Length: 413
Image (cartoon, rainbow, N blue to C red):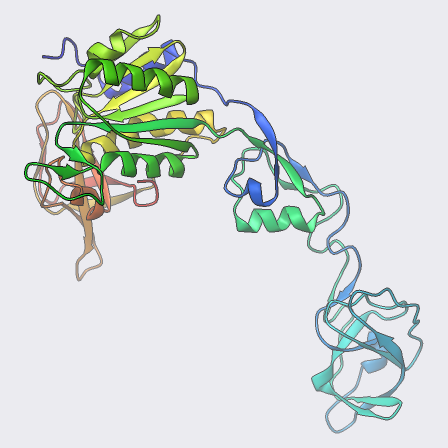
């Protein structure tokens, strides 16, 4: 039996007291190498973007006032004074009653302050007829209208997606300072677990957890070191953990934490390093057998073997720590208010997380109903759920039609 079950809040506090969460440091990365990384410095524009006034359409650069009054039946005639091409700085100067042919993206020549779309003109030899007036700055993207010199374009802590990478490239920057990615070793244990792709023998199941947890590490901002399956033998678990702790910043395991004869993880963890176990058992459902250790300053999270239970505890306990180590501000689950579509029971004395699926009724009310396969051993519990409802330790059940808060995790798990 577990000697003492900590509440989820006590578990967070116990871990934080033992190992102070912190970012691991910074390094330089190329633009493509920085994708999905966390920015470790503010990005400030060294120049305007665009750096010059540029045409946004093909047409003619003109003085806007020379087109005033132009109509379909009373066109204005302007003399063509040259051509401005994209990628070239022209020496052309547009004077009174003149127009310079221009292409999209080309610099606006001196004297011009607008561009007439080619569709609104008719070219005749060295002249054009303009059939529609254009306002000043019409069809012109002015220098600095996108980004001003000295403007902070991206702030420290921002995760760099394709849009952010594009913004950095627009500033002419080819390397950025990013947070070091925490390396997280992940493995599963259990005599019944075998590698996906192999023949499924009687009594065996495929390894779900090492893959789902590795994917969760990636989603949280870490880099998984996938170690696959480790046998439930004291010496092999001990040696694997020693290697994992040398190569990774954190270790996440699944299985071997309950009370059976082959549940060796608490004993193995207690045998390693100077610090040892932080906790063995949390007053939650699912996830009660969760065990956490501090091995010479590195955390080992040993999660239950049931897939839904392992992912739920990862979401609640492990993910926030990886985010801190990656320099990411820990994210809070999005929430929405709903009505309980059925009665939901809690486990006595334990905070209970009930997986729910959302539905709308004819009156546009949102109802949350427990996922039918509520057992923590069913991976479909999470794949079918839209979120979860948290029932406190001191609440026996949530009644049908009671208003509840649903924590949405579709983007995080």
